Amino acid sequence: MATKAKGGFLLPLLLVGGAVAYFGVDEVEDAVRGALIGEPVVIGVGDEAVMVADDAASMVRKCTTTRVLRQKRCGEVKVVIMDAARMPHITRNISPAWSEGKEHVLTRSGVSRHANYKAACGGFVKKHVDGSCDEYAFASTVQGGIGARTEEVPAREQDCQGGTPAAAYRWQGIRAGDDFLVVISNPHRVAVEPYRGRDIAEDQSTCGS
Image (tube, rainbow, N blue to C red; front, side, top):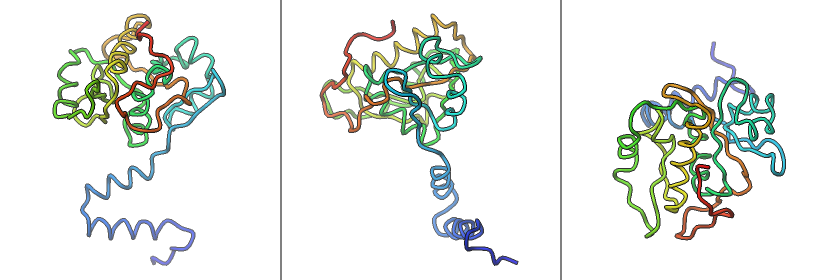
């Protein structure tokens, strides 16, 4: 008999059932998924701090942020580090993408990234002369393309967004079909506002080295 509501989970289930009837399955499924996914987590302090997706937090704590940053590995998993000091708006796009359910472990694609980028950003309209469409998951991954989260970023940052994974693929031996964990370094530098037409990065040097 359905009597358990106070302090239990029956009432939320009944509310979801009513919402499905009123709004439709797809809309309620998206809302429930968003409620169940945790916010990104900052681990470590100072120069050793990193931001990771909620689901990756326990793994990164075990292998330590020092190893992640210096060895670019966490256990057997290779790591691609997106530096918020260089890419404050790129990382601003990544962190909410994790909250929305985008994958934090990506798989390098074996095909050209251009088709995925066009699928994600083909209809994007920028607001600023030096703006560019950023997409997450990366266009160079299996998870990229249709459904990627997009946001306007400075063109210089967009170059970094492409150059950073490309360098990691080369130097860390990440081949087509290989998985890797995405981590944000210097999390205190993640932009708190959308791109306003000015490059606010603390470090505006080139990326991919």
